[in-house]
Length: 322
Image (cartoon, rainbow, N blue to C red; front, side):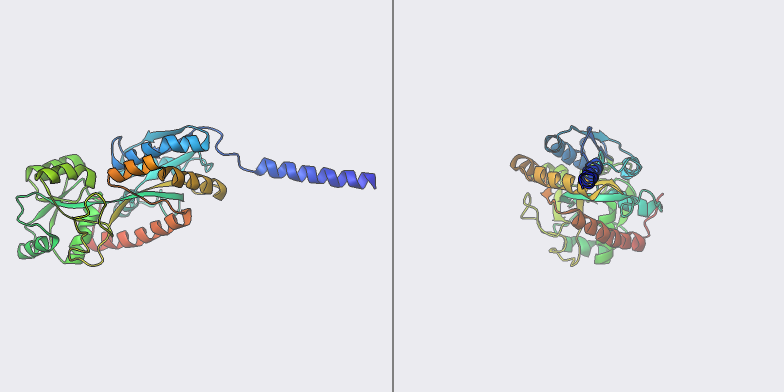
């Protein structure tokens, strides 16, 4: 009997030890947060605002690494191939998805090669015109474009950029023909709109606001589902006469596919908590971001929805890599 009790006890101890050995210990080293864009951009700003608080919560330093190039595909490739242990994260935008659709690439696939962790923030883009263009509303722009088909131009930071796809969506829904003028980056495109060389562009809110306030540029609508808290007087494109139009630029965290659900849940909870700290939320709001958070499942659903909706725009507009 004693021998049986000893054997049973030994089995319990062994089972407990095995369970403890298999339980994830996370994190055990610094966490790398790769950003697929250059320092100073919107995604980089969000990453650097969240990294210190996230590091405090996790008990390990969170190191932001900028790996710009190929519309975030370089950073995406590095993270997709990383060990699925939660120590390498990607902070990216929908640009990774749209650039691959346009180039016909299948890897890394935003819907297959990553575990969605958390949607972090969204930021509407802004439909802005040079004051030399005689329009003050979306309806006036549509009327002018229909009166002068193919004679108006818009600038973007390149084929498939965050300025290109939303304008093609507007063209499709409004039934207008405005010619795309792609540049090698947002800065030269924006500068030419500012100079009046090209009459319009759809950039981010923060970069435009000072020029709008000084009268050097004119914001006529925002691209999101609702008006922004920074410019509550500016209507959305949908409100301004194009029902069904909605385009939010989002930033979110991804991990390599195969990352344990417990680790994904842990990182998600800390991202949501840090994002909602009063000082972090206030800074993001002042920069034109809406803090979102939410579950990994909700982020996965948004990625799937974006994939279908933006894919439709790209196919119908015939957007292809040059």
